[in-house]
Image 1 (tube, helix red, strand yellow):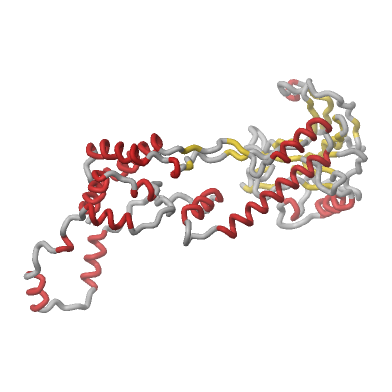
Image 2 (cartoon, rainbow, N blue to C red):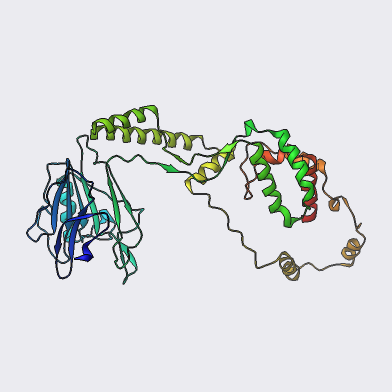
Length: 397
């Protein structure tokens, strides 16, 4: 039938039913594939072997009981995946049913590892209940060192004309690669501060010192900083990758020994755990808040603030406080207010000396604010840039 054709794949077997069915496809270039073997009487479990790996395509029809053991064991490294229609807390259901308990017991007895990540979306999205469920599962056998066969799973978005979501299962060693966010990391020790000061001195004179231009001021500083301060970030990297990891990877590619993959993944896990412990013990907001906030941003715990225009103005708040105040203005108070000098030390414009004093009193290494401007950029502002800040603060005041 034309409905069973998938471009780029070959259909090697299928089982049909008036209400459900299953099919197994392979790529044409796949070698060492045995003929499919029906395992169950109803034909809804099919086994093929690719090299040394036995693959069981499984489907349990709804409302059909399972005996124990639920699935047959395998003498080879094996992967069982399909729609099991079973409920159990091990794969995200709030309660267990009889079929799920039998399946969990089989996995325990046969030393099969369930590939389940609660952080990923469910493999089935019910259009009626508008909730995600996990009927589609994958079990893999354990290798000689007591670790599961190297395998990973990725649940994709909803598939057209189906409530099931496609699931990609990658069998074999897959070194985790991290894609970092495009946030530049500044190398302040190699910054050309004289050139930075000269550029800000030249460019700041064309920008009026008003609160409306503060965003343009921050963009100007970042633009000048990118030209005079080394910066960059790693687009792709593997955390805690070492020469030992490289050696183990080459050994696995040559021999295909699964024990080597276990040693490699365990070495990466132990190195990351040590890195995590050191990061937690050394996180200190007192001496270097910049490092602490950088770590929190990497962990996703420092979400960018959402700027919202307040519906209540400062004038309305002060007016309400004045109306609710129980203080009765006396004649002496009114006389004192009217006799105040129109100009005093509090109403004088901010000076460059005050800006210099404030910047000198601030420690280096502090984290950037919501504008993303590091304190070192302000400490190395040109004289005209410091005058710009003084005028800005005067306008705000």
